[in-house]
Length: 404
Image (cartoon, rainbow, N blue to C red; front, side, top):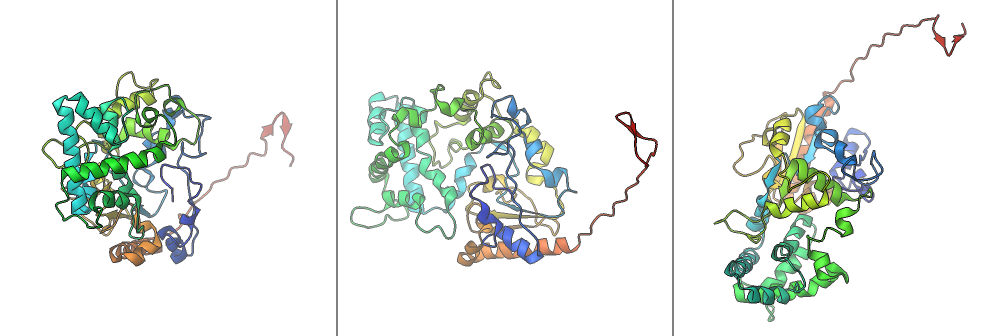
């Protein structure tokens, strides 16, 4: 298995039967092996993460083995695997909007709509008062201010059937439980209460996030002299991931289209993140790049990739769901050779054994995966290799005859 876009240190638990990887190994009387992605962690063919080094940091070099080189692995198991590269991936927030508590969703939308109304009005005084109430008085640029409002939403990806209390639900409780301990109805409390509650939550949590930094240095994205933009030392997962994002995959997590319910400010559009691509890699981009997702999808098949003996597990609440084969509106059929099984759970929930004990839909995914992998491996036969050896007894090495 691979730990994804990160240093593999700390992921050794995935080699045990506390995970599906270990369950497969136990079932097949095999071993588990972890492979760290190239250009992540300490697995780097070059001594830095410069643009010159990243010449060889591509999807072609790192992924797609089961689709492009099917003889390498006989069978595969993909958890929450994104297959369709998308530039404007506003749908990242859709599973969250659709499955989170309704009161929280409605109040978030109301607060974001209020922010956008203030911005559209051009009332600088009102905007400054609003950002100050959220603890962001020193943040210079409007897009950085409203972009920061995504922070609580990103915590959704960390949820699982066994996560219990979490940062995300602490945020929702801050909005939806009033001072008397009463929860809001499904419609929410409304913009006045939610705006004040979110302002209090933000102003109390941002100091911990920024750890004494100047607030604009912490949340701003325009000061390119910061080490965040210039540090090319290895084991910088954010930089390595952004290179792939900026060039080949996109997945820019922005606001929903106009007229559609939005958890994110309309001011946050692809150019906001594309600008940061240029800032991170000025030697590669003279202007904000648009990731070449069409080339990537054509090369690997996107939603319609084909691979024999590939089991895919997806989750209804996974924020990446709309880039997987289970995306709404995509007619990808589950087949015996390429089965797709979806749980009601979150991102990669099926990988953890105990999640199946807490959620029967996850247990079903795990059980089906083990069944398919077992069946496929039972049909594998080692290849017959014939080796022809020719020995030249008159071969000379470095001027000396080979002893007879």
